[in-house]
Length: 267
Image (cartoon, rainbow, N blue to C red):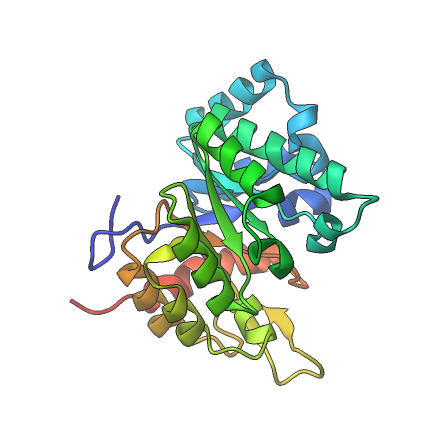
């Protein structure tokens, strides 16, 4: 269902990884999300039970079937490996293998977008590790949504240079706020390249760079951000509800749909 003013998909897909880590039970989390009314989820490719290396082709089909029977769409995969691992010789091979495997699994689950963070130095060079990821995206038909909210101009420049239909930007407003950036300004700099939008809030009134909080309780102007995501016409799939860092992520999952609906423009 497309419920945005511009025909974009404004449903919420709950990111399951944070919830599953509380209990270790991915299927129990999916059942509970279904009862809360969610009809789309984001799978975490770094969670032990849903890592690509733990899921055979049959296991991936079983996971897709489990969701399908509950009328839950798998919106995409999160593959947030620590970005510093891509710059460390001791970890880079492992980080690349995990990311390449996530792209393969995303293809098996329906050519889904894969969200990940990459360090700025990799985006300042042509070819190399990023070229390898792009080649894998080409081979599998999966899509890459790269996060670099602290340097949106650099990411936009890379995506302009890359000019690849399967490579775009992921965007998290909480990460932008934590970096001291206005989410709407940062997202505007990425323009047509925004491929996957996330939904999360952060309160900067707390010491340091702020803390994650339940949607509507932080600094994010939810209504303005919702409109911005709706206008990102290249964005695909639902909006990903990111529950990472919340003191009570299940409360976050319960509150967010109401706040999100209230932020919708009155037509």
